[in-house]
Image: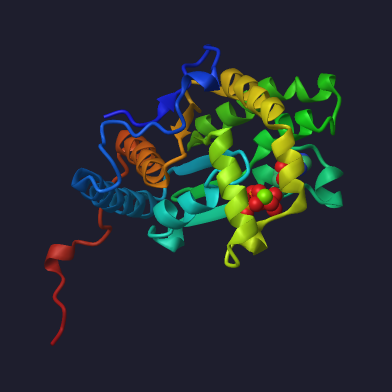
Amino acid sequence: MKLAHLVEPGSKLKLRDIDPRDKGPFDDKQDSKIAELSAKLNARLCTLQERLFAEQKRGVLVVLQAMDTGGKDGVLRHVVGPLDSRGVMVQSFKAPNSEELAHDYLWRVHQHTPKKGQMVFFNRSHYEDVLVVRVLGLQPKDVWSKRFDQINDFERMLTAEGTRVVKVFLHISRAEQKQRLEERLKDPDKRWKFEAGDLEMRALWDEFQGAYEDALSRTSTREAPWYVVPADRKWFRDLAVAKILVDLLEDMDPRYPEPHLDLGKLVVPD
Ligand code: ATP
Ligand code: MG
């Protein structure tokens, strides 16, 4: 069953063609199939992640990108939260500090790529350097436009060295963002999340969508594909992300290591 949209390498993505309200084969939120599938995927994800950690041979890097209020934190809470924290790390990338700005843009990112056995989730990532940097004009075109190839090279290197890379764009509609920002303004429990800059960014909605279309089209590769996840419905978003991760780990097929002792001969004393 396909829930998310793979950006075919070499194709030109049009976000308008993907409905953010898509709910796949499900009727509505009450659909009992949803709860069933969600429980099944989460359990499978936990098992596979434990195996990846036990195996200690390969890493997984999951890049999460979205427009503001797109639901990155929700995915991290619902899908990533239940995983075994020994083998999982979440790394958030804010606007770079002066030390980071004094280096190349991949410097701060590379330090947080997974070690063997680890799954690392990037909450924003090096993609900001071809998104917000482009839209706000923080670097000239001749600088950011070279970054698509550089990013592909970087991710190809990670893959060749034993890290699987998968990238997820949470796709919300403009109307849904309006609603979520209004909630942040009205709901006393959500007000703390609101930042004045959120409205300035919203005004650049079309520019960001265009920058996302270019970035995803240019950097979706066989070894490090992009998936677009319809994300107006939070339950569908979480299901779709869990499915992407389960499919990836099933493909990797991590194995528990062989015991290095002859366990059959050992006896636990009384
Ligand atoms: P929330 O949904 O809770 O607001 P967030 O991911 O938006 O979470 P913020 O602290 O609000 O977190 O935003 C981080 C900001 O850092 C974003 O506006 C993003 O565009 C900016 N940022 C990230 N990387 C870069 C970069 N390389 N250059 C410039 N700005 C960046
Ligand atoms: Mg924000």
